[in-house]
Amino acid sequence: MDITRNTNENEEQYLFRIGQAKDNGLIDLTWSEITDYVNKEFRVDETEYRTEAAYRKQYNMARKFFESGVFTTDGEAMRKIEELQEEVKKERMKLQTLNLERNRLD
Image 1 (spheres, rainbow, N blue to C red):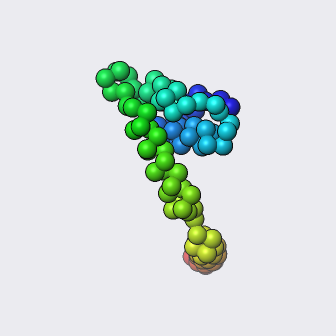
Image 2: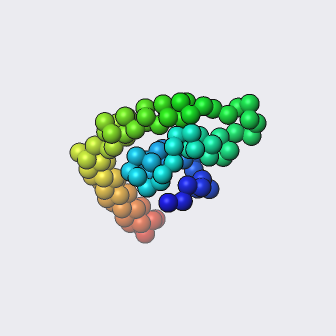
Image 3: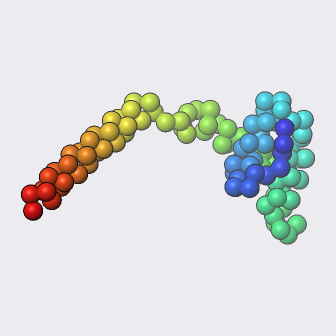
C-alpha cells in the first residue's frame, strides 16, 4: 500500500487512512514509524514534531467515533432530502413553464 500523502489529503485524513491500513494489516509499520511519516509530511520545524502517543490517541479517538456510526448518514434522512430535491425540481419546472406561457402572452 502506498503510504505517501495524497495531494488533497489533510493531516487528519492522512492519519486516519494510515491508521486504518495498519489496523487492517495492509502495512507493517509501528506507530513510531507512522509518526515519522506524519511529522515529515506536516511539520516544517522539528521542534513542532508530535509524539507517537499524540498521533495514536488521535487516531484511536477518530476510529471510536467512526465505528460508532457518528459519521454515517441516516438512510431515512437521506431519502427525505432526495424527495425534497425532487419536489424542488418539479416546482422549478412548473415555474419555468408558467413563465414561458406568460412571456408568450405578453
